[in-house]
Image (tube, rainbow, N blue to C red; front, side, top):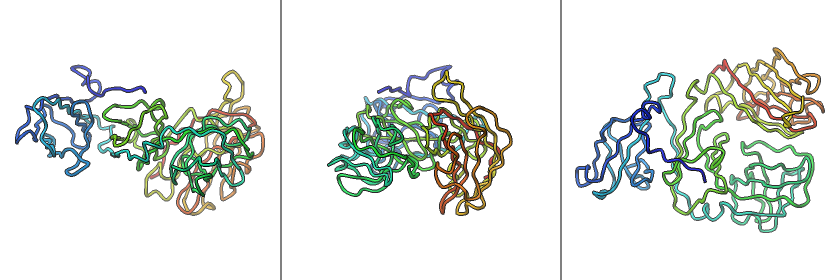
Length: 397
């Protein structure tokens, strides 16, 4: 597991990192070892308190460990020892382009979650007509919204390697899957055997999007993204290699973009899309929890997954999207270049239903809506896997 201590910043490093850090012994505390006045002031919205290297949780009652008064006082719920090491680290938001708020998620791992994490299952089957994954006894410890990581699936056009969420649990032998972002699957082939997967611990985090900067701590250690954990829309999933134990503490702190507010520019890259698969690029939840409609421009690029293969396409489109009314969702293509297919096919006004809505041999972009959300999809029907990226900008809130 790759880990990094947040502590260790000093002198010029503090200035570069926009951090304020102070360290104390327990003997520095007053009021019977419960009240600390850190040597440096801190931002009460973005502060991390460590006791002997472990990240503590804010809160006046269990499972909380401490409370904050203004930007100068930390009061511990229980007295600390005079020899304890205490460290207070805060981001100093003096740059107006940085966010002024942070969303926090704290979680104590349960016995069931610890037991399920990193449980391997082999020899499962997948029915693409129902999105049912089956294995005798393979889901005894699973529940709705749990996440699995498919590590092997040799059948072409069937369930691909990657992370999936359990939509419904039929029994201990079978579950219905959906994408990690709660979208229906659209595979075209059934795999009768040889699917291997691992149960992994996943935490749902409100308002987390691809472009948010997420700090994920496990027992006070700062984890490394795409090594120790993976970030999806409103979800943090831990790698099987992270040893999740009962009653361990997880803390997630996430911010909006450090350069742009989340409502003005959204992007992502390195998106691998298999043939005959639809991938959600952006939804109304990326713009804001209460968003109903938006208009924006989006540039989409894609190439063959094999880097030396000369196949690519790049497109700029203007989108108008509205949830609960697919007929009011529009796309206008501004420019389009490349050699994957004749052009980038566009689908709007309720004309998208699944990847089959796009002509075989092409890439397509679609805007669609259901009762709760609007979506922009990139659809791959090129006949080969692609790697894609996008940037949406000038987004109306």
